[in-house]
Image (tube, rainbow, N blue to C red; front, side, top):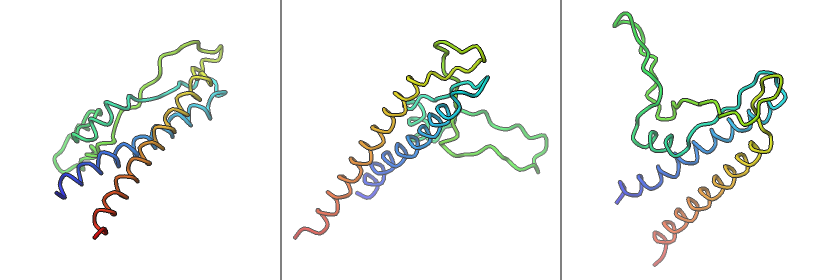
Length: 134
């Protein structure tokens, strides 16, 4: 019982953490919309979520020349590779941020975050009701 509960809640928790990180990436794009040479970045949420749940990483492990060196390859499932977004129409100064597109992605991600949070709250509320009802 607890294993299934933990699995359900860890999916929602991981989703919320990834949504938060994506919001930071998208917000950084918006904040740098006037920075010359700035390249808009993003990541594929669905593949990042599946990698996070399976415990795999998109990054390559760090090579060590001696076994006594510290292994800095992070085992964190959120150690994902943020990629540059495909240019729609770069500006003359090399900036690839399209403010309208970034605002749309930012709003969409925020709505999905709120939906996940609402779903998680209702799941916890249902469990609390099941535990306290007589």
